Image (cartoon, rainbow, N blue to C red; front, side, top):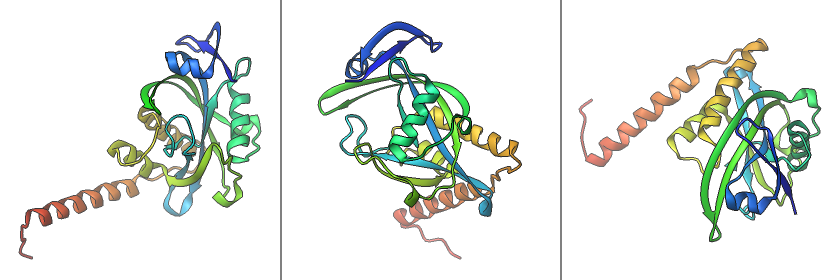
Length: 223
């Protein structure tokens, strides 16, 4: 059984410890670590994020795309140690504490039903960036937790989340903030990201949607 410390809105401990399933039954605020793997793509002046696809055997959000690596903070463990442990367990990556870059804190709340049971998630998360150039083939996935992983351009991922056409369980407001942090990180390290590619994608999508609508309406446009 996994026991978790309950927390206040400022992240401090209440002194109460609860079993994980009861935390999600009652919707108690608890701690989690979120590690987003990122990599620079100089050929297009952009960056990728790694998405984890959750195992179909998970008790919540099975088969959904999720944060690169994330997990509950076990009772008595701190955020950074938990983040490093989850990263190694889920993806087989042994990172050093100084390689994880603290980005921001996020509080998220979501309720859903899985397998006939209500699942209440209310988490206080510390979000980290980890720059990583590993290929998918070089990662060692924890089969019972992770079905697969996928590198995706961060701007493309943001657009999928905004449009709602990606099966995911990522907090949209967290990813909005993450996109800003990714841009800030690469700017600080002398690798500013361009925005042209996203603008072109929007234009292409809008043009494609217009053409589909015209075709559906049976409208003929003289060239």
